[in-house]
Each structure stands twice: as structure tokens, then as C-alpha cells.
Image (cartoon, rainbow, N blue to C red):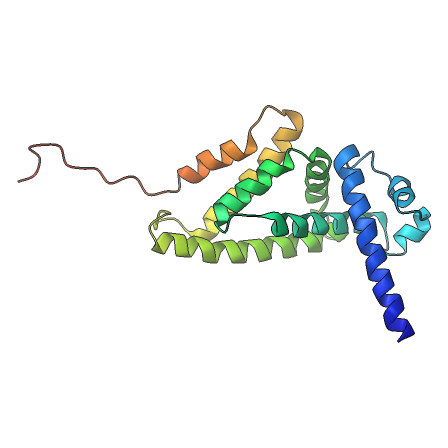
Length: 200
């Protein structure tokens, strides 16, 4: 029983750390958010904080995972496109987390980096879910049926990630609006009514 209680307390402390880390990174960005600053926010030493995660890199991967879970919990729309646009629009309020995502996405190219497994799993999970939703949208006539759903989601995913990087450089970019324009290109062309005199 004591071991179970200690485990529950450890999980609670880990959640407390992640909540504090989300705030610190959102406010200060990836490079300025030190392990010491996050540790101070939860009254731990840096070594005590890393006891819960193993390394600084694994801590930052856990922060991204916590951000994803929070975003998914907050999505109001049941439509996959509107849900994505909702998250992208919300990201403009947390540039530090956008910076963290972009940085770790680049570092995940290294097979040995802890972020590699996180991004591989994240991509497989999101794309698996999104492809099923897109296939349903194609059957309903909301998305062009001549397009491969896997290609669509890869393209939207790549555009969303690229827009985040561009937005970090130029905050005038409207990421959600640009994504909406691209997604509109995937919709079937409106049916053309025949001009008077064309029929018969």
C-alpha cells in the first residue's frame, strides 16, 4: 500500500512539474526556459526535477506530450478540420511552445534523440485518426474523392509545421487562415448549372 501511495504521489508531482513547465516555456520559450527555472517553480532542485524525467531532453518531450493532451481536451469542434484550425489559432498565444515544437521536431531527425520516438508515435496516431475522418468526408462528398487521404494528411501536417516555423519569424502570418485556404482546395468544385439554352 505504501508503494502505491508513493507512486500516486510521484505521478501527482510529475503532473505539477509539467503544468509549471508548460507555463514557463509558453512565457519564455525553449532556449530561455532552463531546468533550474522550472525546478524553482515547483520548489525542487534541478536534480530533483530530472529524477522524474531522466534528462532535460525527456522533460521537454514530456512537455510537448502534455501540450498535445491539453489541446485535445480543449477542442470544442467535432469536425477534424475545425479542430485543427482551433488548435493552430490558439498556438499564437503560446509562442514558446511553438518554438519548442519546432526545435524538437528538427532534433528528432537524430535517431538517438528522445524526441524521435515521440514524433513517430504522434504522427502515426494523428494520421491514422485523420485518414479515417478524411475517408468519411470523401464518402460524404465534402472532400475530393480523387485524392489519396494519406497524401492529404501528410500535406496538411507538413503545411501546419512549416507555417509554425514561418510564423516564428514573421508574426504577421495568419497560420489558421493559410491552412483554411489550402484545405478549401481539397473540396469538390461546385456543380455548374447549365447556361440557358445549353440543355437539349
